[in-house]
Length: 290
Image (cartoon, rainbow, N blue to C red; front, top):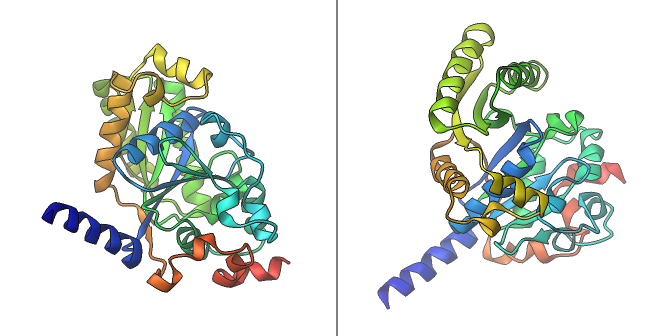
């Protein structure tokens, strides 16, 4: 009885006090799409509330096996509510297609802080916003750069060089200074050794901080899951790849991510269900787009 009461009290505090929503931009190789899908699912399995924001032209929803009819631009145009534009996976991950909306916002001068505070308010309660940030480079200015970002790369010397070039470009153009690097198709030891070498090089030559962000071991089940547009937790929930994602999800509690803190009171808790017109009211900078 006491345990149930404590759980309920914690749930109310979680909903109304809104201690903060963390934001993790994800960049890198095409494998970043599967990383986002599976990492979001691993976090959801830990009872984290996750929003997967897709700044590309539509990569994330299909990878979950979902079909998107609407996206963020329809919300900005006041055509539909935020909730109607948002898809939901069977594990509870929210997915917001946002390619056109993000391009519109990128041209508007809207700040990253304003954008993500507004998104956190509309999606509340939400613990983490994962952002697919690679496909549309011009939208990178909308992503918070003072916290860590995740760079995804496959094993191999050429991939490491490409990732280093990406991080240097993001640092020079948008101010990103800290990265977690996740290596796919690699054992833990191989990935750790490669990232350690990369970290020393990036700090010595560019002043960029790089830390190990985990590894995803090679496994045909991952390819099978991607081909079927399913997560690894649908295909092999107790296998080595699922365990690797779960380990990374657990380790993320210690990552230094950007935190946005929208004000959510009991009176405002229903704002996410409000009509689309509420979005510009919560985010005044958008009004000049119309």
